[in-house]
Image (cartoon, rainbow, N blue to C red; front, top):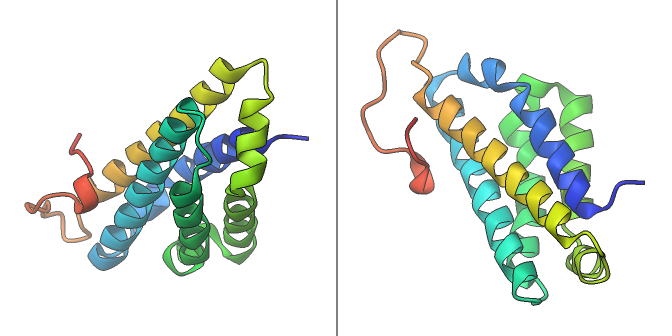
Length: 153
């Protein structure tokens, strides 16, 4: 059975497989999805920092649980209802602060768990950036800054 860190990594790897579908969405859906994925990525990065400091990741986990509830509105058209529900549930369950803290704190493979979480953050950030920079349906690129500090590619 995969622990929380590996589950977050799975969610990230699964979401990025749908980048093409997200990039074909309308401009507002792309902006919304890009913003949500950027926020998820930032929260995972804060989670990594908190765990590295041996702190219970209260805020990061609270945010991830909140974002798991937003995933349905943001991604159901691209992922379908079954996959969206599965990933939202996995994201929410993997964001249990006590579970992830205990998994990390009691592990003899902290480096591996940190790496999995960092990869998850990077993949989701890449997804956010890829969606955002994809040209809108009209073929004209967006010129404004990416949402929530997302870096352009």
